[in-house]
Image (cartoon, rainbow, N blue to C red; front, side, top):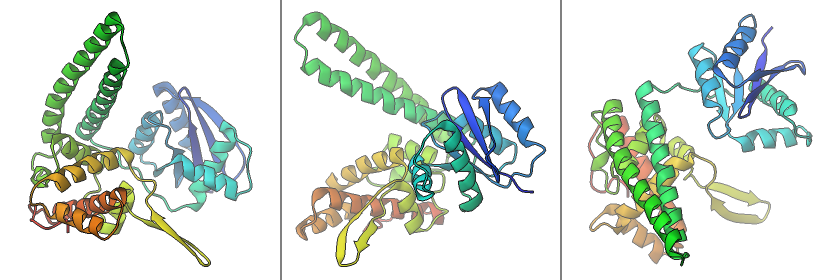
Length: 309
């Protein structure tokens, strides 16, 4: 009999639910615990495993399961919460969450996790680390403007300079890692796409060129969803998606819009002239940009002027 598995991931523990049934077991979220879980799953017929994304604590076990050949779907936390409420369950615990995830594994369409290559995994870590360093530097820059004590100002300037030095070193490593993953990349031909945006797209959006324009827009989180019920027709909204890619794409779109003579800039100004607010206009430009990049990668072609219109 097929057994579907759900894993609620914590910093130190894994709660593993099995469906059918209400059985739940606990394993350490360590390499040794991962091996113990694989041994426990070995005699079972497991067609699908659902695991909730928890900000990175799930990476080790997902890689271990994928390497062992299991079909694993990583779920955003809001999906599991919505499913639990739809089942009429409002209590919350690690055990209950694992059981809900196991039920989801039995009922949803699998979206198999693809284990990244070591080179892509290294690039993703570098990009994420750079993002964190930039955030810390900018936070300290704001604190510096609010500080009057000379000693505190000196300490903050030291941290800002140290962060800037680390960012420059990370930029060097990111450029090298990007070449290792995709030496033939032509993303830098796209207006607004610099080395950091290029690295982010390569590291965190490996599906580029393999999805339709609607799918890639939804995956990034720039696809507008209908909000209509009865006589009410609400404004369409974007939601979900890969925030780290969307953030990079936002900066790329603004750079392209502000550059002289770009098709994306013309589109942005046309949308504003039609009465669209700035945020709606720039999200529309982001959607145009990512769909054009997707087509460019799919066709293995260079950038064409006007492709984002």
